Image: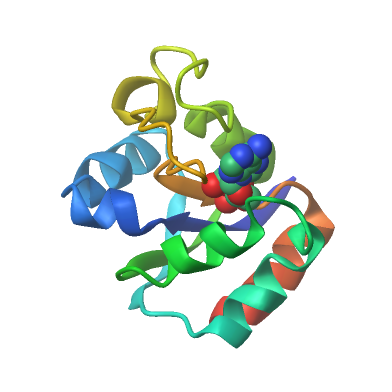
Length: 137
Ligand code: CMP
């Protein structure tokens, strides 16, 4: 089925100049950019986006990190794009992410309090609908 998902190139990806390289992989895979914006989310937006992580040890550092600079928000469409983008991104921890994935090829493990893992992708159709509403209205 054709789906839509929310992709974020997080502040580390934008700051390191990897937005183009990440977009090239997304486009090479055949996914369609439906909407794309540079965003500087406020705390309230991030609290909504990361509601499921509230109370976890990395929650506050995660919000601080996400407010440390601009991100690129993408409304992405394609066949099974939710699962497909997460596969393209690789596992959460850049150290163990497979080579060939965004996080495996470009992710660095800085030993920080929060994983600076370059990208976010919605993890289910329900998350995608919820997150697209938050970031694109
Ligand atoms: P993301 O998939 O965007 O959503 C939650 C984020 O929290 C995740 O990417 C990482 O940036 C971060 N994260 C998840 N698990 C951990 C963890 N165990 N330690 C530190 N950061 C984490």
